[in-house]
Image (cartoon, rainbow, N blue to C red; front, top):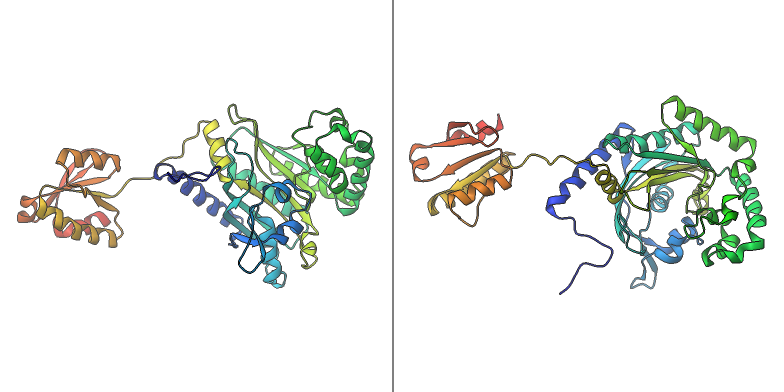
Length: 419
C-alpha cells in the first residue's frame, strides 16, 4: 500500500478548522500592521539558497531537497522564506516603490530533509513577515511587537523572548576573529560541524546543539564587548522601545541564529510550557543588512521572522488552549421517501446558491440515523421532507440548539433562513 512520505502529515477535516482559524488570525494581524501577502514559487534556483542562506548552514549542507530539472538546471524546494522574498524584491525592483519599507507576509509550505521530531516535519507551513527598505530600530520593534501580538492573541502565556545584537559587519568581523582565537586551540574537542564552522562561520559554534554544554562555549567572548558605538546605540534603542511598549525580553549573548545573513537585532521566541518538548523554539528572526547586495540587489536592508504553524499548534496543546470549532451547517434536510429525496436536491441547490450552507443524507437512511447525522454535522436547523410537506407547502423548522420548532412556508424557507 502506498503511504504518506516520511516526515509529512495529512491534515484531516476534523483538524483543518484549526489551521483555518490560525491562518485567518495571521492575515488579520498582518493587515493591522499594514503587511501584504507575497506568494513565491514552491521551488527556486539552488544558487538562491546557497548564496542567500549561506553555504555553512545545515539547511544548505544537509536539509535541502534539490533536483535537476529537464533543462539541466539545479532547483531546490523552498526551505525558508526570506531568500525568495528578497529575490522577488530585487527582481521586481520594489526599491522604486514610493511606499517604503516594503512590508510583506507569506504563508507557504517549506521543505527540509531533517530527522522527524515532535512538531517538526519535512514539509511544514511557515508564516513569516519581511520589512525591507528601512534600517531603523523602530522597525525592529514593530516586527517584535507583531511577533508577540500573534502568540498572545491565542492566549499563550508561557512565552520567553530572547534578543541579541550581532552588530554591523565591522563588529561581526571583530567578534568572529575573537571566536576563532578562543576555539582554535581546542577545536578538535567539538563535533565535525563545529570544526568546519570555525573556518566558515565561527559564530554558529555558539548555536551548536551537540556541544552546547562545552566549557569553551559557556565562557566564550561576549559579542556585546565587540560591538562598535553605532551598533551598541542601535541595540540600546531597540531595548528601550520594547520596554516602553511593555514587551518583556531577555538578552542572550549566545543567540546568533543559524543563517549567515543576520546583522544587528536577532531574536528567538521560546515556549517554557510543560510538555512542549525538548525543542522549545517557536519562532526566530532578525535583521539582515547586506543580504540584498549578496544577491546582486540594491544596497537595502530588511528584518523579519518566520514561524511554524505546526509548532504553534503544539504550544496551544501544551497550554491546554482549544480553538473553538466553527458553527456547523445552516440546515440539514431529512427525507422520508424517494420523491422527497429527489426534490431535496433542488432545494439544496437553491439554499447553497443563496449563501446558506446545507446538506442531506445521500445514503437515504432511516429518519433516526439522519437526525444523528445532523447532530454530527452540527446543523443549526433541521427540516423533514415527506409527502405531507409537499402537499401542504409547509415544513417544520427545528432549531437544534433549543429544540424549538416553527412552521415555515416551503417557498419562503430561503428568505426565512437568510433573515
